[in-house]
Amino acid sequence: MAYTGPMRRLLPFLLFLGLPVWGQGVEALWARACAQCHGEKAQGVRPYPGLGEAASLFATPEGRRYLVLVVLYGKKGASGLMPGFAQLKDEELAALLNHLLALLKAKGEAFKPEDIKKERGQNLAPDQIKRP
Image 1 (cartoon, rainbow, N blue to C red):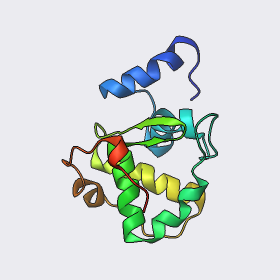
Image 2 (image 1 turned 135 degrees about the vertical axis):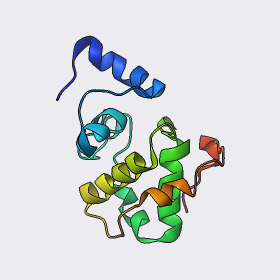
Image 3 (image 1 turned 90 degrees about the horizontal axis):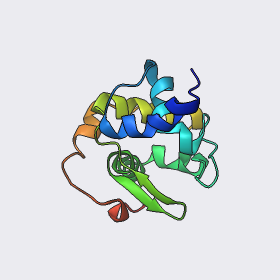
């Protein structure tokens, strides 16, 4: 479902509040949490980056931890600040990372909710998240 007009402007606010937005499944979750900046296929939407360079991170424990920290706490980058999505459930964040894994055709194991849960509660600021 494509959102237009006032609904498109409300999506970031609704997501910030943690309110449900229409649609189900990981594609809908990707559309509301990631695609506005990173694109439907992780190709990037100017000025925000594509995520193709993240493919190698799925294959190492350090890279996988970094990806979890980024989705939980955000990241400060050259294009600005990516917000964290700690308000989402562990299952939802694992599903988003697994969707990215599939989009990039990256090598690596699927994320489990437990992978997210063990990194919660650290109260990290986005500028503390450093790529390995």
